[in-house]
Length: 211
Image (cartoon, rainbow, N blue to C red; front, side, top):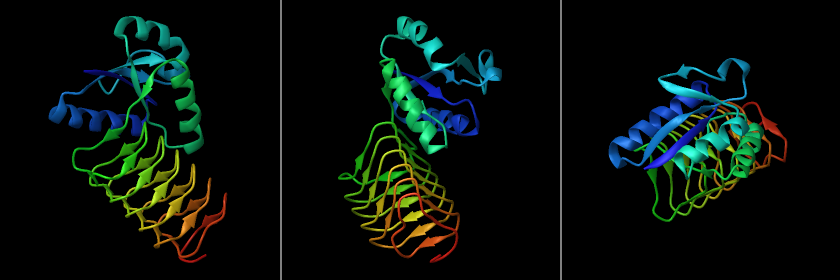
């Protein structure tokens, strides 16, 4: 059974714990050791029934000694922070775990990178590719042959159409849409309910349809 640390004792962290528990019911494959968090008020005690372990560095030696191989999942919504925290955890020798809700549908030929989160009811279609640390949240979809680069985030209900390219650390807000073949650049944002009707440059943004 995998021993898993969730990095981020927040609302999203609680959601990741919930999905891990749902996964364990079907596979018996993971046990949560605790939450790591740098915040001063989250250094000890219990949150949502799971121990608070403190910062990554302070936890690493103790946990490694007790449990041997350690897996982790970064439950942090900020894309750049999730990338940095992943690097910190991997420097400790921990292994990134992809968390995928049992109700999600992932095509057999889709490629899902390490440390991704795929929420309830999400769909990853045939030929799609997700980089490391990508979030595809509840009821979001990634169409056929689309590419979502590392640490991008597809918020609940958002739609990435077939053949799209979503750059690293890009953010698609809830119920946003990217029409077929459109590219969204690295660190770009397509706001909630907005539609990207043409390519969005690196660091660019779409606030509403076509703008």
